[in-house]
Amino acid sequence: AGSTVENAQKIAEFPGLDLYFMLNEDDSVLKAELDHAMEILALQDSTYALRLYQSYFPLTKNTYPSFSKNEKDFIVTHAPIRIAVLKDDAPFSSVQSDGSVSGILTKYFQHIGEIIGAKIEFVPYGSKDAACAALKNGEVDAVGKDESDIFDANERNIILSNVYLRMSMVQIT
Image (cartoon, rainbow, N blue to C red; front, side, top):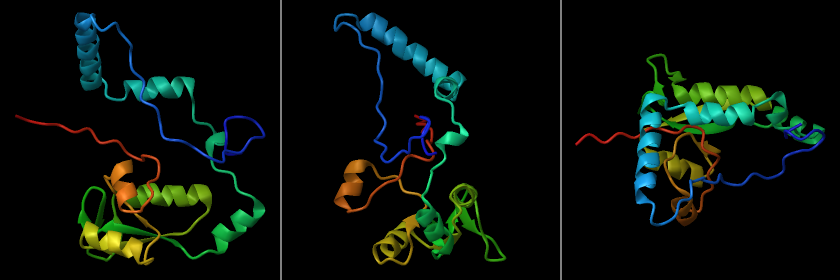
């Protein structure tokens, strides 16, 4: 089953919702204290919120996608899913001296392939523009890494998957 509800199949999933604390507009001192405490928590234990969420909404075997027999047959007999990756974008993807592709994306997509029973093929490109052009031309089925947001994606007539990795950004001044 592809749902945490028994005998139900997930047919749609919508973008996440950011949750906030709500305070009276004249309580800026408490807001500053809460914001500061959350910043400290994020620096001290960057995975705390994720672990807390998972303790209440655990991932189980029921969260794997479920497919009909026809869908399973299609996946098994379909040509490999072709993923565009960059040749020199370590640690996400890089071409090794033997021509193989390695990195975070290869491990992630190989695991996805195992879950859904699909073959995955990596197609290296020298630039993001070349990878995006290959997607538009139908040479690949997906681009392995993109930092677009929903507005940029809409302008470029592409669709984005769910977030597969959140990167912490640091600014040093």
